[in-house]
Length: 154
Image 1 (tube, rainbow, N blue to C red):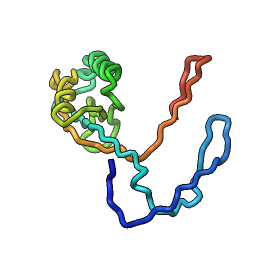
Image 2 (spheres, helix red, strand yellow; image 1 turned 30 degrees about the horizontal axis):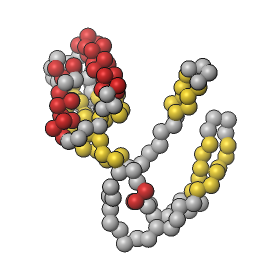
Image 3 (cartoon, one colour; image 1 turned 120 degrees about the vertical axis):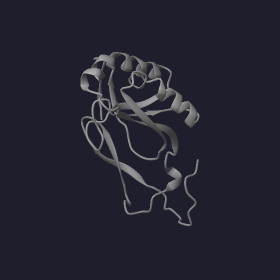
Image 4 (tube, helix red, strand yellow; image 1 turned 135 degrees about the vertical axis):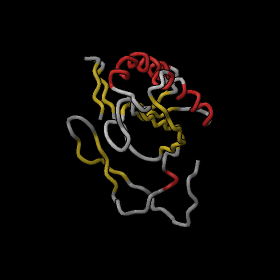
């Protein structure tokens, strides 16, 4: 999916190995000042659910429903619907029950129906808004150890 039409011509991106560390390999671009290559952006659409505590929601109420909420999220993960999720810890309007969740869904109606099944929402502890969100750039690194059954998130 192309995001932009541009009259710019982009130079070929050249990557070369950088420093080898004990933990990972990294690469560096030769020409970091070159214009962005829009055609190389990921351009994958997801749905961002921003959850806001309902008036009067306190931590005790959240704690009382947290197990059911986590089971619901893990079910979405098993169904390959859930991409990322977690509480919002600071910022305007945050409080017990604030959160951001990114899901895979075909359309906004489906995303809203999924968000409406959140046990925190069903209990009246929070409200939500749904936004179409396009993932273009970033990186994720995970090191899995088969011998110790552990992982490192980077």
